Image (cartoon, rainbow, N blue to C red; front, top):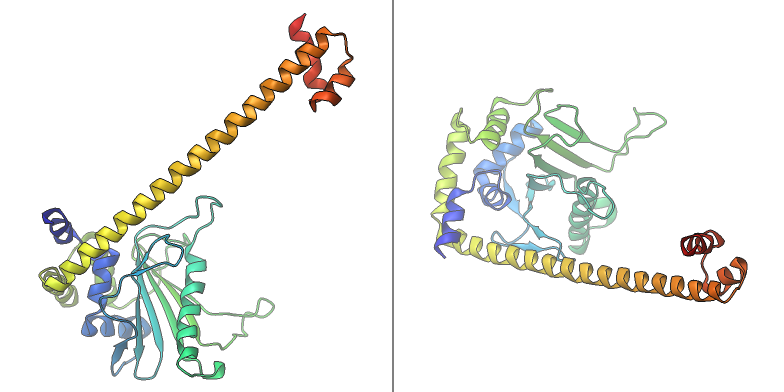
Length: 289
């Protein structure tokens, strides 16, 4: 227990668990949204239980995003991204498809609550990234759907996706957002706002409910790592077995080809009998001379 408590004490805002709990502080989250979107928000409400730690259905990770609605019924989804996740099997980056998944979750939730599709609320998917996904040094990358044939034509589905690049140098952001980026990157307090964030983090770390939630989070993460390790080990054993069987069959074919050669059969007939290529049989014959 002491080790897990110590780990919590060492967390910074770049940690997705701590980031979620800071975003659950209404005053801070509301101010960030207002500064990012250059608008006034009367109030916000949270669309999921505050202490929820959701495991992905495919058991590939834990969701620590924050879903919010404001008084104008605009819905928001916020998440911290420390690393740029990649599908190891395909080599493709996962963040673009993750935005699509989050958008589907927000829309499905609204439809399940009785809205028709034409009543779907405006949505913002916002990722705080400690890396420059698009490699253009922009502080903020904002995406809306546009017509490829005429970029002046926008598909007014009211769905916006924003990637916040805390390392960015291009584009304007408010002083409080820049100070937040600095705080995320280096834990540097250089504004009244980041002082408030830092003080809030101290309060959160001293909250027994948060400590209990973090212990649960740590145990779930360990379970996921153990499952991944077990799956990797099983795959390795299966691959090794398959390779061993393949090698055994190849050796058997080679031995059969050698026996048939000693009996005087032609290279072509041996190739047909063993499913080896003529070139492979020729090589085996040359090695016997």
